[in-house]
Length: 239
Image 1 (cartoon, rainbow, N blue to C red):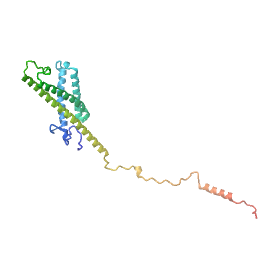
Image 2 (image 1 turned 120 degrees about the horizontal axis):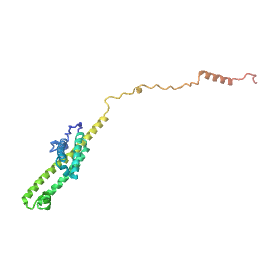
Image 3 (image 1 turned 180 degrees about the vertical axis):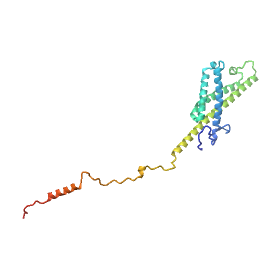
Image 4 (image 1 turned 180 degrees about the horizontal axis):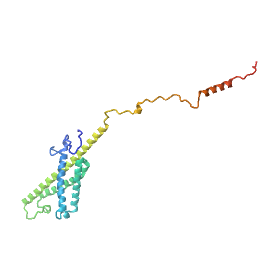
């Protein structure tokens, strides 16, 4: 894979696995679309919580936790989109796993209602009265099933984009690390300057070091003393 330059609007287009929607849409562009879509929904939801009637008072603790989780996920998605840090997508991925799992559970429940329209579950979940005929029950159940299936498919695509974007950002960061390592390991174009002190040849050390306490006159005095010691004394010679 070719090493590409980094940037907010720089896309890696050489790998087809980083595309979605039949290889027509890049995952980073798809992630931007999801950010705008979820951001609009989140702003609308918080607007109703704060300014409209008793919407905020009627919300229970579970809804408040999900709203805060979704808000944190969107903020992390925006930062991840700008900085291309894959770890910031983890809150969004976990949130979408929870959402997809929840909608799949509801789809299974509605499938049971479609098969058994007169069951107690159908009356409890869809509010069927006893006077509603079979055809009407099936129409309502199939309509609800189509809606939940569409939402589940859409949220599943959101999860898919989040996972592929995680891999994409991870790949981009690895490429940048390889590029930085290659730049650091590149040899210099110009030979380094040799230190001025190393260019000068050192003078050879002198073999003999004169003794400051010794002089030529001292040497001559010692020779005279030796001559006087070995000099024969004057006197009659022995026969």
